[in-house]
Length: 495
Image (cartoon, rainbow, N blue to C red; front, side, top):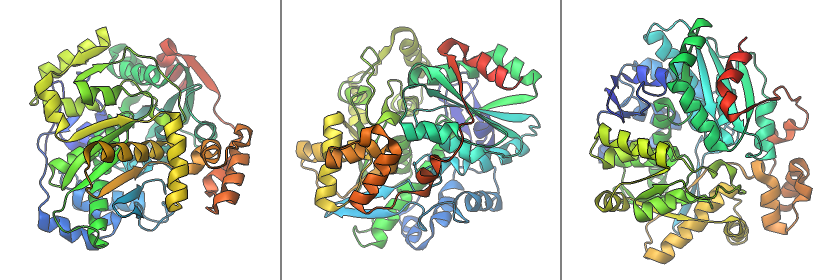
């Protein structure tokens, strides 16, 4: 299978797309077609392990990888107790028509592990297939979870290095500690004076800078990305939508072919886009419900067809969603624009120069057939954490709680009682102070470790070892830089 740039100037193999991360014209790689999964094949997934499900889906995209290479990479990512739950991505029933798809059982307690445990293996294979002998330098912008997951995935992987940029005051205490305590000889963490959009824009500019690429080349390094703009991040996320549906069938919760809704807490749009790709492959998805926090640029977009960043940026208790420029939306726009790369270039140019663009009523209506958007503020989020615990004894983190609130609002507004899956993206212990506050009104003074102890005592849900051990780990990364010095910071780190 070939992969095209959303901006029309590139056609590559899967391994080339993974190795490059972003297309030379600044676009994102998308499949030339969506490989179909038949209803019969979907039914056979019910008796498979998560590893076998992953192989079955991935082999349809990664055609220049052998089946053995895919199987080995999948086993390295999901086998050998890498995840705390044997099902990798278990499905838990919350009420009569609602389930939680738990994607937080990996080493960094967030859904990013689902792809970033696999990406390093795919990237190493991609470098070999394309004769790349230089060190692959991974540049990452993170709003909280991607950074640690990338650092953990690439830590001490031969032939690679991983540099993560995070907004200095824009992540939770636990998220920051997870990153700055990371070991490994090839990891670097740099705080950016700004918000996530500043960090993400800066990384994109580095990829687009020929001068920066030349300087890195002189050091024997080539650039790639572990953000969700990389195809190797996106495709593994498609797997868990198929896996969730297979588990619903296995639990006899639905009949084969019966449609399901997925409600996804969304910032950079990669997670929910993977659900759209699954739908295009034949998964019976009725609605993809896009749940935003107070930074509700996507909610407004799906309601109006106008994407505008002319708004206040809010710091919320769901920091991984504090984003105003959702990069992966470009891949959906490419489909809405009938794969017209010139139109995508126009819209992205308008976004860069003017901070907004409009797709028009017809394309907005096309997207509304599949997507529905709403948002939750901090008050709504805290109330949803408390409500779900009291009603079902289930503990949401603040990001998953945004999705829980939005699903309730969707059902009120539409009367749609389709079985629905809430995509649960992080352990509540990554945000223990806010979760504890929602349940008891006490946030333990904002101390994440004291809050975790109290949360465990109150709920009886064990604190993950990853959080317990953080208190004892030394801080290894203290670098900071301004938004305009990110390239210099990378070069200094390798000097």
